[in-house]
Image 1: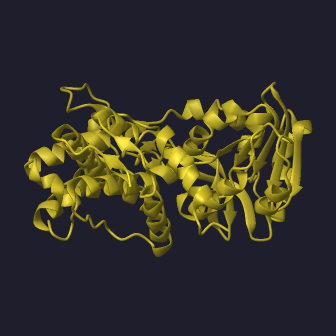
Image 2 (image 1 turned 45 degrees about the vertical axis):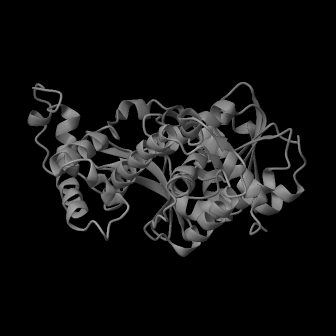
Image 3 (image 1 turned 120 degrees about the horizontal axis):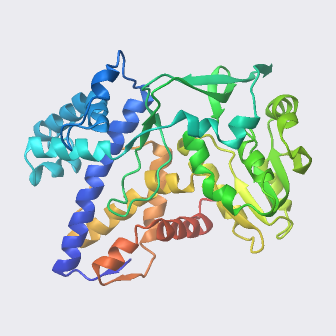
Amino acid sequence: MMDILKNETIKNAAAVLWHKFLLAETVNDIILSEIKDRLYLQNVDEDWLMSPETSPRDTFMARVTDLAFGDVVEEAVTSLYENKEALLPYSDLTEAKDPSRLYDLMMETAMGQLTCQDRSTVKKNPYYERIHISSDKENCIALTTADYLPYEFFQTFHRYKKENPFLYGEAGFFKERMTFPVILENNRVWMSVVPSEIRSMEKDIEAAKGKVITYGLGLGYYAFMASEKEEVESVTVVEMNRDVISLFKRNILPQFPNKEKIRIIEADAFAFIEKQEDGSYDTAFSDFWSGVDDGLDLYLRFMAKTARFAKTKHSYWIETCFMEYFFRPVLIRVLMEQITGKKIIMPEVSGRIRKVQNRFETYLKTKNDRITSPEELTLLFTNESMISLMRDFAVKDPMQP
């Protein structure tokens, strides 16, 4: 159990963090739920949107935020006040603010999570400049393109914000139609190269050097970008789906400027990693899950398998997203329960995710860290601290095979 000094300074700092968490989770849920429903602005009056700004509250982004989220935020605020018992602990937000102030705070927070994306910037990405997609199919796997409509909101990759470490629901939109490559499985998008994917791999691509291995092929974005680097000698791709490999070799690989660097191995990542020798590759990148839901168990299992490597540097796609969605909320709840001495009941998640979170909570209670200042409390929630906890948990988790 963490040893927390329970003086007033620590309690006040914890209360501030808890308020930030409740606000962030409410806004995260609103933004991501609307994106899931394919929110887009119809019949946009661009002359009004782009008209001169009259005040800090009347800007282009403020107008877009109001059109996109004004009604749903208003409904959320009303529900928090009218259904306090049912919406605990989130209805605790109503204690310090009246409805209009809470509405303004939520709208301001939501606006800070939105970006108007520049299509030309994406099109200048080396992969977009070099790779041109022609529709093709191999059994139930199809290579094709999809698009975002003008003012259609899509999730973007989040970077840690010190002012509120619990915010992760970010959205972007283009003013024009934006086409992007996808792989469909049974007519459903399985893989794509979109702004969130591009940004989510920036640091991993930057770290690539020497002999590189990546587990998961997709549309070959990571393999392409890594192979473009002078300091990368070779890129080995481990992919188990034969149809994906066939489509890639037939349509995409021939367009790679440095195709001679690419080697594809048809194999299961878990089986391959068992036989892989430490140091046979310099850089390793895992990316064989499609998102946070299917990826959580795969990440934990695979991370535990890679922990034995000392010479090969491993990284894992959307590792910070697993942290934001599933682990950071557990840590703040456990700390608040320990500080206040009160049990906090959170809304139900799927049984599979709840089991992982319960095991992580049990793991946290084995930690002997001492917290004596607000600075130490805040430090616990940084990405570096959280990822260290997650990786240690993955290795020690008794449920990992």
